[in-house]
Amino acid sequence: DIVMTQSPDSLAVSLGERATINCKSSQSLLYSSKNKNYLAWYQEKPGQPPKLLIYWASSRESGVPDRFSASGSGTDFTLTISSLQAEDVAVYYCQQYYATPFTFGPGTKVDIK
Amino acid sequence: EVQLLQSGGGLIQPGGSLRLSCVASGFTFSHYAMSWVRQAPGKGLEWVSTVSGSGESTFHADSVKGRFTISRDNSKNTLYLQINSLRAEDTAIYYCAKAGSSGNGVYFDMDVWGQGTTVTVSS
Image (cartoon, rainbow over all chains, first blue to last red; front, side, top):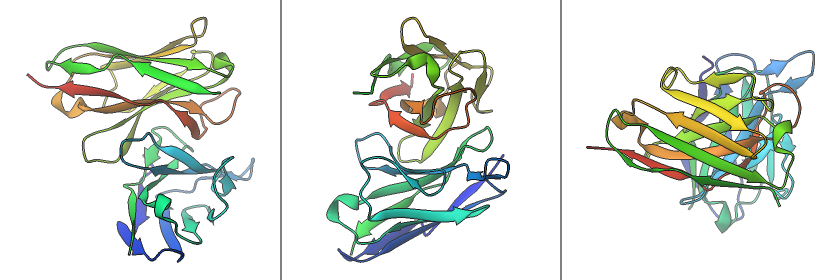
């Protein structure tokens, strides 16, 4: 199974400041023939279902504010919130869909400092 | 509007059975793989099962293999999860989710999620 890890477990950032979350997979998520990384990022707020933010490692889902961006390839990935807003307080998960069982990272909780 | 409306959760005794349903609207259901993901109380997200658009291919997590069965009825735009031999550790909110891209295969992100249904296993 592909193991997903995230760091940090939690972080507190001042409003308007940058938040960075790292995600690492135990094997490469790059499907070479398609040149795509099979990685997604989700945002989960209390009492709500998860929301897709990013797919193919760096493609922003429609309607997601452009302060959310993501990068990375192979085994190392990053989600960045360029200017944290109050509504961004949530838990963020990375997930690989390169191979079953599809696996999620443990989540990173983002709070306001 | 793309929507997934879930039903079927509840309080079940250990060893019991349950069927979860997820009715889809707003997209061509048969063109998309569908999945179930669960979240135990206070825990993270856990992928449970995925079925291809045609229903021919299914995949299950080892933790549920042999007890859970994912299926779909494309004529009814409905996804199912049959859950048997329930255990306390199956207590969770169960979400259905739609694949982010259409086509063959199951290797996609999940772009639309149902509202979740709670399954509680307790005597």
